[in-house]
Length: 109
Image (tube, rainbow, N blue to C red; front, side, top):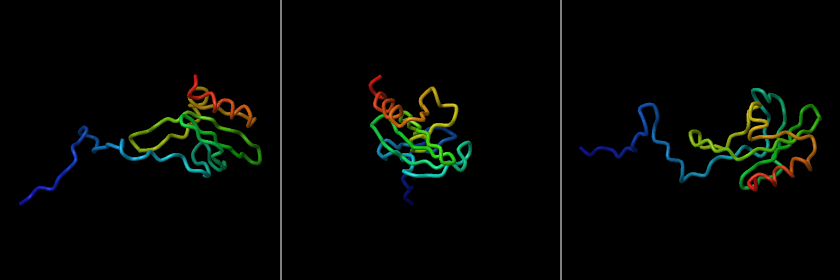
């Protein structure tokens, strides 16, 4: 009887997770927040090679989230920043001009 081919394991608690050949899933173009962002409306404005800019609507008040592209190979995604990431690898602005300036600086720092 032939044995089925199986992928190697990368540890006792992990299955094989070679996602290098798969494109990482980016945050959606539009979404409604959950958890700490529950009920907020998000819309992607711009994407750069190393960063993203989202418009955040909080009860009619607009904010702009700019964040570095942080890859999460475990889940095959690009992470959207949690509140504790702001000031580290994510920033929040009230002005679109300020947000776009920061977006254009990321990758050139």
